[in-house]
Structures are given as C-alpha cells and as structure tokens.
Length: 297
Image 1 (cartoon, rainbow, N blue to C red):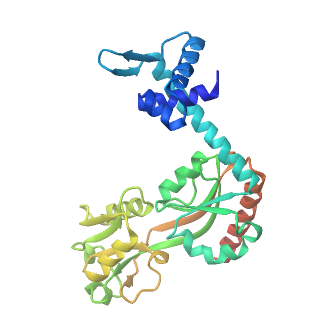
Image 2: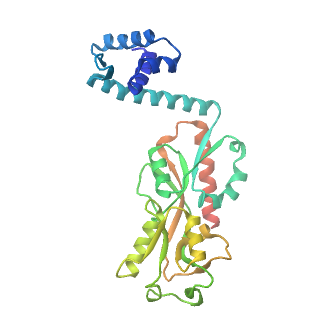
Image 3: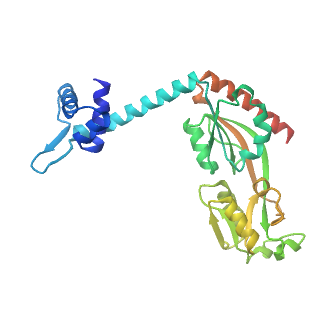
C-alpha cells in the first residue's frame, strides 16, 4: 500500500472534495482519482460513495475504517519525525507547573549545564493534568503536586521534593487576622476561595471542609490563582493556598490553621518513556538535583 495514497485519501475523507484535495497537494484531480482507485483495487472494496445525482459524496463503511486507521498511521509518522528531530538535535523535555515548579527554577536552571539550550519546558497549570501527561508518556519527567505523599503507580519514579502546609489568606483588615488562633466556629460564616476541580487544591480543600463543617461552606471556585488572591485581597473572602503560591504580599495576611492539610511536591518520571539517551541523561541529572532539594528542605 502506497503511503502517499493513504495521505491523499485521508485528506479526501476529511474534505470530501477532489478539488480541495488536489489543490492542497498541488496535483491534478485525476491524480487524486487514480490514487483512490489504486487503494480500492488493492483493498478490493469501494471507499467513496459518489452520489452524482445529488452532487455529493460520502465514505462507505470501508472508507470509514480506512480513514480511522489512516489517522493513526499519520499520527505515528508525525511522532516518528518529531522523535528523530529531537534525537538529532538533542532535545529534552521537562514539565512543570509555573506556580509550583517555578519556585524551584532559580535552583534548577543554573544547574542544567549542556541542556540549557536544548530543554523544552512543558507548562501546565493543573497538577492533575501534568500527572496524566507523565503517566501517559507524553511528558517524560516533571515537577508536580499532589494531595497524597506517594503516587500508587508502578510505572512512575517519584522523588519527593517538599511538603507545604495550606493556610488561609485574607485582606489585612479581615477580622480573622486579629485572632491568634482560628477554630471551625470562627470560620462558619466565612466565604472561601479555592481552585476549581482538576486542581489538587480543590480536593484538599473539600476534604478539609468536610472534616470541619457540618454543611459545605460558601465557596467561590476559580481556575486562576491570581484571581483567587486578588479577590481575597479586595474583599472579606478568604483564599485557601500554600505559601509558595502567595509569596510575599502586603495585600494578604496569612491565617495559620490548626492541623493544616498538606500539599506534596515531587519530581515524577515515567519509567517507560526512556528511549532517548539524551533524555535519559537529563532525567538522571534532574533526579539527582531533586534529591538535593529534598535533602536541603
């Protein structure tokens, strides 16, 4: 089966137009027709149903099957090209959350050495999404966060880097900032701000709230950390965050919790994605640096 015929067919199946397909590849329409005929002859089936009376055409069931498999083939070819390009140019990949991983970049970046100009950073706001990217092998190694100290995944190598306690953050004039110790009773009328579903903070907040209140508290959910902090600083709502997300701010005051929940930051590595020697070397270096960070925390 001719690869170029598959490429032509895939575009034809997408556009359902001989004219558009021919124009896309800068060939004549008869060339596309001949390509289709070769595929139909080889597969002994009709791939395109031409309804000349209605001036329409559609894929036959066989055509739908070939279209689906052709998409997989072309995706694989694209990935092969990317992998060879990365190998030839010694490209390596590293995933991190700008808000969390960024906190450690000042330590990591000066230590990248020969990888400084070849590393490609994959940024993602959600720890859950980053975990899935590493688990699937789409990203080989990353810094991410979790509500659990250890991932129950035998395909991952995990190196704990830091543990952060969660606190409440409020505007300086909020009444709670005047108290030395906060109880659940003090918080019963509080409106909280938390990150929405898909973020580790949301799971930690919901578990904490369930353990402290008989009824779910009033909560505003947002996907933007800066939005949450901005609202907290300009209202009497209270943000639920780890320290490194807030950093130093004269607009917010930290309200420590009794027995605060914890947020776990780790370097994670997919064991099965190590097929590039340069990526492997980079991974080994990052694991060593992560262990240093863990030992110095």
